[in-house]
Image (tube, rainbow, N blue to C red; front, side, top):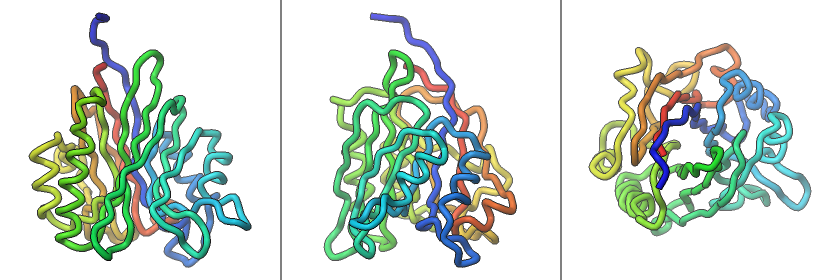
Length: 242
């Protein structure tokens, strides 16, 4: 058995709102500029338009513009195109799967798991976008914690995305009892990420399992990021032990 060791990683989560900005303009190039400015190693995106019968989609365009590998986990279709979560990575993606988080008649949701090779080590990253209904999120939080706690998948694990929890409700209670949560109040003066121009809500979170140290958090509030989506990106500099 090899000795444990630490690696540094810059991760982000960003709901890109179909690349539609607060000015009503749809621009994958502008979203790519926001991502380029924050320089993540790995970024989890939500509300991404994928391929259709007539176009390659925003996921492929963002990957090409940024020179990053990507995988998509579609939760549903939007006007004939795939629609869901995407992970972009500067490190090789060695495995990808998704789990259904849909509840009753609510909008289909999923959890995307991406295994990322950092040298000889593997990081397991979970990209999620929970629902807007209270009981729906409680169901999804329980399902998500069971997925992440699968002992066949080793640590470290990073869980991030748009949890749609306006306050510390049922989903937050369930997830916080099972996973470690990065407390934004310890690292950021401003912790609210939605809506972008005048954030009132803290919807975007990062959880983890295993040995993870937070070196810093950022909530970039540039003119471009404030306009590009209805969310702001949440960025974390982490030290992760393998």
